[in-house]
Length: 346
Image (cartoon, rainbow, N blue to C red):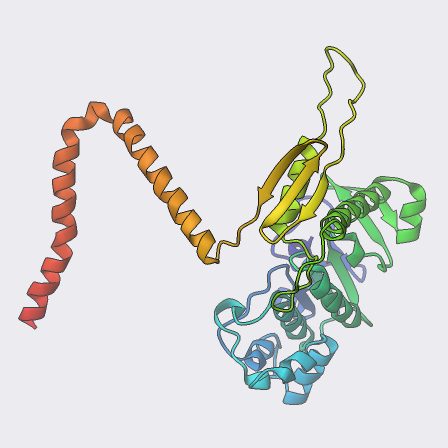
């Protein structure tokens, strides 16, 4: 869709029209100057924020006031002013010094500085977390005012307020209409909304189980005492999955009942109690001293256990092991020898 509107390629059949005019009749350069694109993963260059935004303009370079206004419309002006050098702050290579939400808002400002008549959003918030998504979505809503906006999205929350929503599958339009109209039809769009709502409910319920069943623990480094880590949530899901008996179609079609494991959180990890049986899942911080020692021990054990197997698998090539080892030593020693010789020559 994005490529068709910008004429990166033309359709084999049918037409793409803007204001009733086929896009093939527009001058390509003039057409693209009227279009602003915001991609899922914006690319910033290793220059200042101001310079990255200026490069989004066409024709005459924008003034400082125009750049700042574009940043206000993109909900980026406040966080830029909080940076040490403001608009002169360096973005780093590919924007490495900025967060995902900050990069996305700068990309929005870069698209708005040319004041485009058409705004194309290609999964603009799909790579962001929920907190950053809300801020970026507010900027997108503000940027979409008084201009035609085409949004390609899988997160349905980003297109809820759109005038017309098209549900496309396998290159065909299945449904079209507003959010309320599509929900009332109980079709493909309604099923997508229900599926995403179910996923959010399951994720929140897992987090609630991990937080509510844990005893009070002292707060460390400003973190919430009951907020589970991703590893702990994974452990809870795995424990609950293994606690449910599978269906045996050969003997009985009914699902056997299983006790729901109670989850307890301790200072070392999670303990799961299932009746009389107890399972312990320990979550160790890999950055801690204990975690580093455990990782080194496991890697050393795996390396030693793999060596005999490698020798057995390659025993038919045993005659090449000794010559290969000698050649490897000679090849590795050649670089230090060359460095010594060249240093004396210089």
